[in-house]
Length: 114
Length: 110
Image (cartoon, rainbow over all chains, first blue to last red; front, side):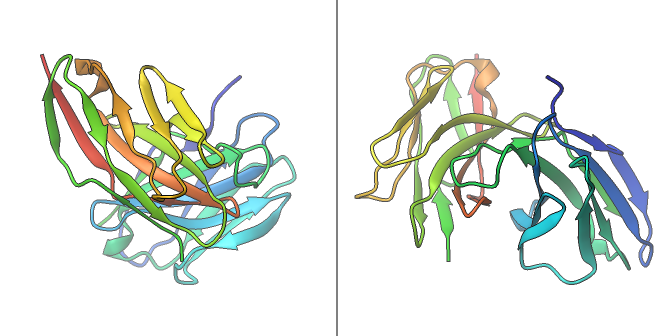
């Protein structure tokens, strides 16, 4: 089974621009979560989607948004980029959004904002 | 709210040494507990998990036991190898949302 794939792997943007990141979950998985990883703040939960609906949202400003398509693929969008948005963005998929379900992570997208 | 506290690193060990990384948690309900590992330049890989009190997770020689009475999930390995050098994250899942510890960098020297 193919793992979680994320595209692109690396991105360089400038302040004020917007960016869209993509995540394809493991085949058959319907839950997709997004996390931001930075040296200062560590790993922080952004949001989770299940069956095209946002189930959970972390404590991030409205510039961060996401969506999920009927094939379970997910995108996240960051508008009006700031320098502090530079991070590794990780996507994780699981079969169902339960406590006990393991989330499997993709390799991440490294976003650099200049 | 939920939170995870894990031992600060970095930790440097010699091959075949014993490794333990402490992890304690605060949760409102009955979370599942996980250890993830991150190798340089890669995403997170699940190392092991436990879904209820007294469960023991194990994988690749690593073990951790879900202790509800001490709200802990300490990671142990009896004999580490150079290939175990990585960053280790303790995490809890409640409502499908993972909360992570700060990560512990482990370096194993030959």
